[in-house]
Length: 444
Image 1 (cartoon, helix red, strand yellow):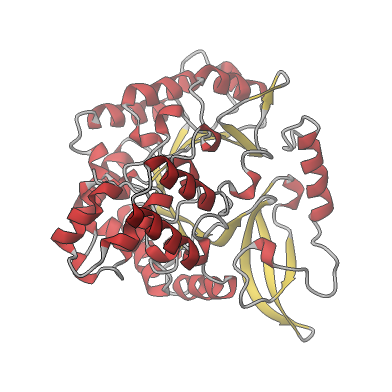
Image 2 (cartoon, one colour; image 1 turned 135 degrees about the vertical axis):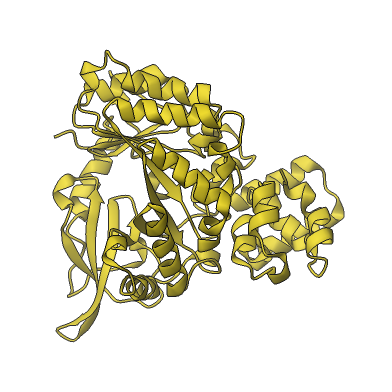
């Protein structure tokens, strides 16, 4: 496992033409964790720094605004104490919207009047759970929208729970919940006994009060970053048998795999891991954000979706890079994102056209950019709710003025002279309910 302290030796061995100092400065602010599989099998060192896997795994100097990069490099050169370096890094982080979409304030559910830490309930049918033992990853993606919890900022940035009973009781009491998503970090960094400790209470024989729970999802980058978890690691067999238990319980196990680039799928270890997981009866779905410097070309997405279908992975979502961290470095304007998606989509076979995008996971819900049109002489974005805080918004379309620089929902304004988008009054009401003691999530 490599961290920022290994940057000088790695660069000396693989990329002697690169000055490690600015990369070290970036790694003081952004989390860095790179394992041997990524460093030795996925990164094309002959093509750094442009190589997409290098961009994806190693914090880049341009992820910091120039004044902040210079401050960090100066602090590193002058040898200030470690505490001072950490304080400077935290000051920079706090200016980067570390918790987008108000995820720590608007989505936390309550049971018997008490908030449930480590859980989110934003959409009526779906509960998210953040297991304490899954608060890191096999390697860190540089674009990650949960980057803040991997830094040294402290407990204020973490969002986690180890209370499996609380999760079970909440789902039992809320019969509209049909889907629980284990996320993190990455749940698949956990030893299998911990993962089983969360899953088994949801699938046990005496779960009549959980009959409404149809699907258990696991969001993970492990198939790309550490596929050996399912093939040659000591617990690989136990992991696969746990997946089989979930499927035998009558529930669907959906493995939400994060594949950001075709190279991750092309590795034989990843392909074998996918085969092993599918043999348990689980379904594997592929999703990733559109990331500048990594996958911002239609051909990359076409190749990735075609290969996913060939391997039995269901193409699911192309996300828009969230407005957090180094979004200025990674994000792609919405108009270009729409063009990239449509160009790739038009070249797919029908079996790959299960994918949706580009999708913004914003505070009101998942908003898709489904068209760019000229209507009555005005260029507009055609937007659609694929998922929403208020279920009545799902499927609704609405229009925003076309802005070639816009990269997020908050950059957009309504088209045709409207003062606000149709959902905004109701959204304000839900946010107010949150402040008055409700989770802000509808239960009807």
